[in-house]
Image 1 (cartoon, rainbow, N blue to C red):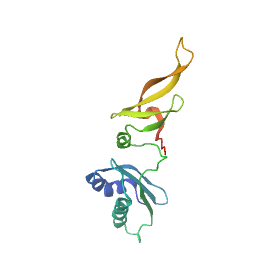
Image 2 (cartoon, rainbow, N blue to C red):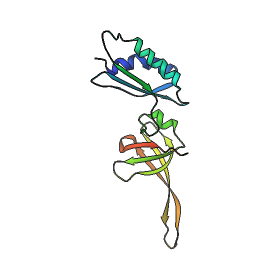
Image 3 (tube, rainbow, N blue to C red):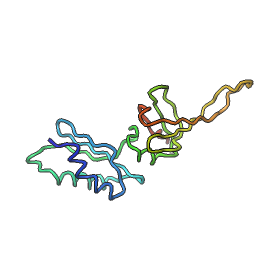
Image 4 (tube, helix red, strand yellow):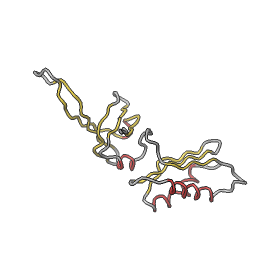
Length: 154
C-alpha cells in the first residue's frame, strides 16, 4: 500500500523548489491518492500535471494500482495551512469558532500561531436611536476555530 509519507517524500523537494506549498495529501485504504497544492501566485493545470507525472513515475502500476488526483484547493474549502492564510490576507472570510457563532470579516494579519479578522457590524450605541457601524478585531489561534473559508463574491 502507498503511504502519505511516500508521496510527501516524492513531491516535497520539487514543490518547495518551485515556490509552492502542499496543502494536503491523503491516501485512502483503496489507494486513492489526493494531493492539494498551492502557491502565493496560484497554480495552473500544467503544474498539477507535472506533479501528477512525478508521482506516477515513482510507482509501478504492475505492483501497486492507485487512483491519483492532483489539484488546488476548491473555492469553498476551508483554509488548512499557514501559507493559505498568508496568501489571503485582505480578503473577506467566514470564521466559524468553536466557542461562538460564525461571523464574516476581513483577514488582516497572520502569525505563526494565530490570525486576526476585522469584523464590521452595526451595534446599538447608548443614547442614539440608530445603530452605527463599529469595527471589532478578533484574534484566534488556529486550533480555536472549526473553519475559515474565503468568501467569494462576483
